[in-house]
Length: 266
Length: 291
Image (cartoon, rainbow over all chains, first blue to last red; front, top):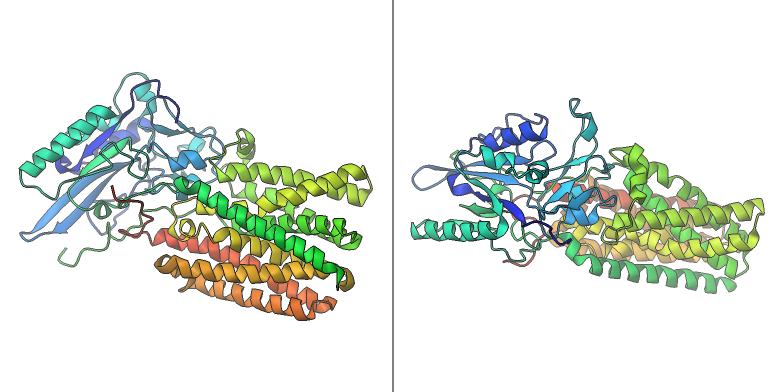
């Protein structure tokens, strides 16, 4: 982790005031030239993009949940978590994925060669390779995801999705301040008797991903929103993996030696 | 909306499927074969078995020659393959692997050129030793590469996968080299093949058992049929090589079984990863400590 030259910035997405309008998805597409693709009738809810991907850098999950009194609508605008221990960044063999001065994680589309390693590495299923988008030829075959509007941060603007959000469900700012805001909001909801409210990746602690640059207030279990429960970056166990590989290579060497030594007696 | 809610978010998987195509399991197979064959050739050289050393070196060089084109063709932007060499990143098994493969290829091709063209023999011997050494990580880094992902069937098999791949490499390298070499000179290759076949079968068994529920792709569906076929072929090839391998025809048949089985096993492992990604619905993901 490079020492951030600037204050770490991030998102706090408060799903309790999300109205599912998808202005964030549209603003993101407008600003970042994200192609309008993969939009279909999913026959599940008002969701018609399904999840995050190369062409959806914000995704509004829309859940119709049966309750005792009827149906509850749960909406949440999902986004790249900008992990402090980003698996995508660690496994990237070209250095195309880098950490910015704002402590966010960005793919350089002109460096990425589309090896695809970041895609299964991400514990949230965020990254995807963009394919077949005629209007964006420069990014075809390249891994794509939210940049936390790196270009806008550079000139002191807030990210497009946060600016477009009409209810301030998507809040942008210094992470320190957002953590406090999230804690206050949780307390307020609990005081109102909304015990189902919970924070996701928002306590500023390790979280299995070293801490998140985008965190959430949810009204149901994370898995209901297509978020992993207790996510952990695979890269944490790299030493263990290399140890196993070393042991296996040692066994192969032993096999080679024994095979060669035994060769005298045919 | 009156039915029971589906698992997770409308049964949609949390993870994205890997985009790697058939080139990748084929590379895993050929890279493993080349790595173990280089080691076999070097050991034969130390034991003054010139015939076996030459055949093993040839097998290694031919196998590795096919690898860069395979890897490049699988990229989303093949014209940028050289970007793989713009950094050396210890946190990325693919970066470590690219550099290992590059150094290994240069060593094997140098050793083969020296051996078969009769040029700079001392340098060729040095390259042969280098290739033998680099062949060891070349056969196992690919296991680290896929284990270092969030795919349950890969990540949760991180302790067994390197042994599966090392065994597979030894089985295929030993088998192919034994088939290429006159029986009297091929004892070391046969032994390596038998050792590799047994190692692979044992490691695969332990891996599938330890994966528990996450090992379902190995028990049901197309991947399971492939994995079962792979195990049968490896077992048959191992037995045939152990008891009939001195005869050239039997060695050739055993080599086909061992190499075919090892290749099928690589496809099964990669296919299991794809199915495993698809099954990460609801809470069926790799989980860390609750926070």
